[in-house]
Length: 103
Image 1 (cartoon, rainbow, N blue to C red):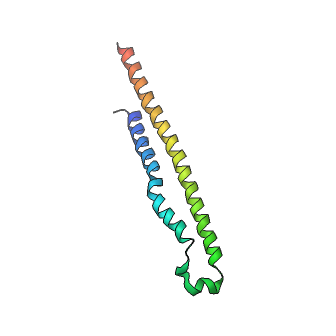
Image 2: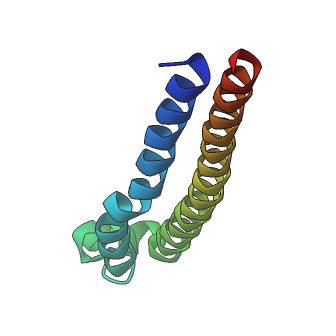
Image 3: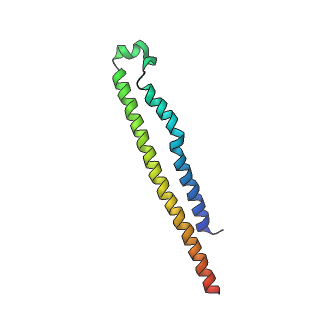
């Protein structure tokens, strides 16, 4: 197996892994967002500190940042997949050129 083919295979696996990240974070992120509306776990402490709204805003910000990361991962996965495809094509073309030179 050529180095380009090995690199293409490795990049393909990396792209597949990046695409899967969003699937792994979807449910926890949804649960996290839901919990930001129910901060009863803070009990009286949250009320006494008047921090409930700040905590809610912080949780909302974290959820938005996580979604932004997921979008970035998707973009990165597409790019890595495109590079993998280009390496595969280049490997095929180089092999064909080598055969043409011999024949």
